[in-house]
Length: 108
Ligand SMILES: [Zn+2]
Image 1 (tube, rainbow, N blue to C red):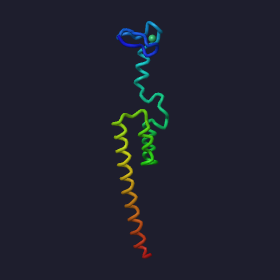
Image 2 (image 1 turned 120 degrees about the vertical axis):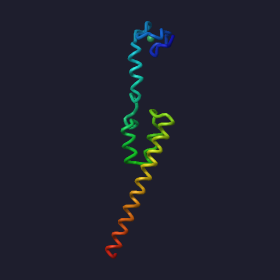
Image 3 (image 1 turned 30 degrees about the vertical axis):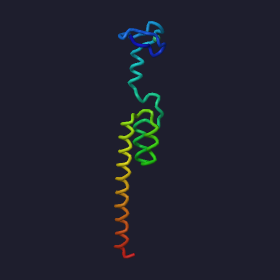
Image 4 (image 1 turned 60 degrees about the vertical axis):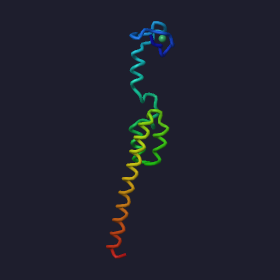
């Protein structure tokens, strides 16, 4: 026996349709599969990736307050954010070093 998610009455495990309220349970399971249904747009994974690209460390609240991610997911995206921030920092430092070098070569 399991509980109907709509009316909370006991129903057969194999039931596709609740005999008490007439709701289709297959439907509910399919809705459950769409994990990001009802998740706010700025918490969806493509947006989270965009926040990381645009905001780097400031994207962390979007990860840690995200109802969609488990603790593993949060840690994973935090590592991605840190890795990207560090890579961007190294790239910026290299560009800055190149800039200083080119100023030197200009004899300023
Ligand atoms: Zn029911």
